[in-house]
Image 1 (spheres, rainbow, N blue to C red):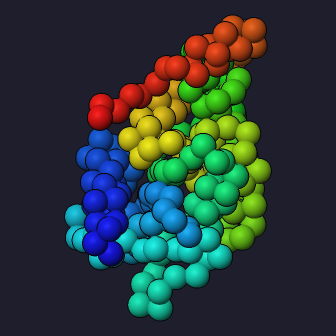
Image 2: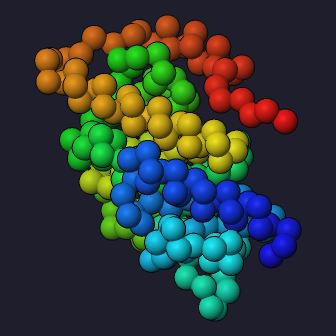
Image 3: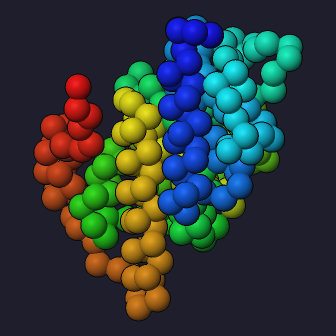
Amino acid sequence: MSDTTEIRQSIIDACLEMNASGLNQGTAGNISIRVEDGMLITPSGIAYNQMTPDDIVHVRADGSYGNNQVPSSEWRFHLACLEARSDANAVVHNHAHHSTCVGILNHPIPAIHYMVAAGGGYDIPVIDYATYGTPELATLVREGIAQRKAILMRHHGMIATGATLAQAMWLAVEVETLARMYLEVLQITDTPPCLPDAEIDVVLKKFESYGLREKN
């Protein structure tokens, strides 16, 4: 426990930041960080402002965890994300308002802005719906997140990944901003102008050395 106290506290701090910024509501979101033999993830049903480092749950790579703790109901898809993306060490899930609305419409966010490339491709895709907390949802997430660093979830919310928790949080904010832009553009036209794939290819290359940098 003592070796991971700082990591556990960083998860709590990020949860509080999500709610304070309006990116999430209540305990709807969940956050995980990769550790040896699995991940640390937020618990089920505990308000963020009441969490302590002891409440953060260690879920092992095989899906097992301590008998006296209950991880987030979405622990399966968090493990799926970490298994699918070797470049991801943190996973942020929330029910951000605009991202959730776009997911309800089942519209991938197209290249209306070059920042779409922050998600790792030509759009921010939407995965099909499955009941929360189920192996079926974890399978859909695994398939979607293998193709992108961030995805929307139909009738649910969004997922963003990153090499660090700060980078995953940064990407979550960028996706929500894109979702808001997209919804506003759709009020004017249902066929918004988009950047060509060739330009996104250029931006993807530039993004290999661009993004949130953390000071040592």
